[in-house]
Amino acid sequence: MSFEIKLRAIHFFNHLMLIPAFVYGEWWMWIASYVWWAVIGTIGISAGFHRYLSHKAYRTYGWFEKVSLAIGCLATGGTPLGWAGAHRMHHAYADTELDPHSPIKRAWWRIYVHDWGHVKIQRKFIKDLLRNKTVMWLHNHYFKILIVWAMGLVLIHPLLGIFGYCIPAIMAFHAYGQINAWGHMWGYRRYNTDDHSYNNPVVNILTMGEGWHNNHHNTPGSWKIGETWWEWDPAAFVLSTFNLTKRGKH
Image (cartoon, rainbow, N blue to C red; front, side, top):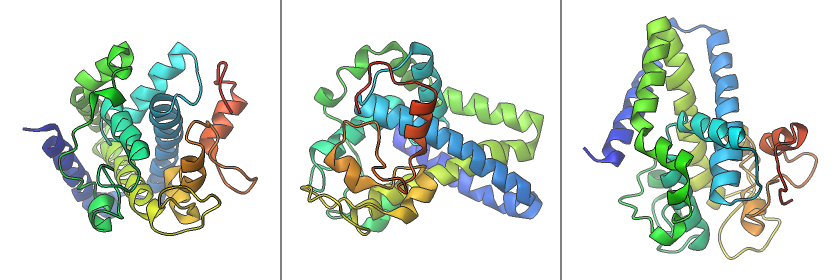
């Protein structure tokens, strides 16, 4: 079974778990799931997979690299290697035929549900990552990590498995469907970039600060994506507050 089919099967299963979640879940469980997704999205994806690994926007400490990338795997959006490789291709070929997920070149709903077709990541985009032991270990053990995490929570309590893994993974699924689709369809543009990127406050709610997509496409090497006081950017806040950027770039 291919990697893509395995991942789609997990996404399908997670969405099925919405049924028992609505039937047996309580309001505080949904809030707790969103808070946990906020941690995964902010530290794992936004700070880890995206700004650190994909763009090398800052340098950090070895322990934070390992923690952020491991947490990012729980979003179930692919391995650090594949995620970063696809994202680097997206920036290199934004809104052209070679862009893995452009809603300008493909139906937006296919981009939203992560139906990109077969994406072959060119080696030049990941050759540095192939030498990263943490990245490769997480890549090689990706599905084992998800299974151990999910089953460990289920053994404690079935609802903990649903609200500790399935619901946050669903939030991640829709968050990055939104940024890949809507982030290139509507919103406002501060910069006249050579693509269709937009800043979208609605997308920003679920993506934990990644909605300022036009800002990001203008300066992809910056570890800060929000540029004004009202452009909420929790990853930049965490990196700055806890001094996690080591000789980083602004």
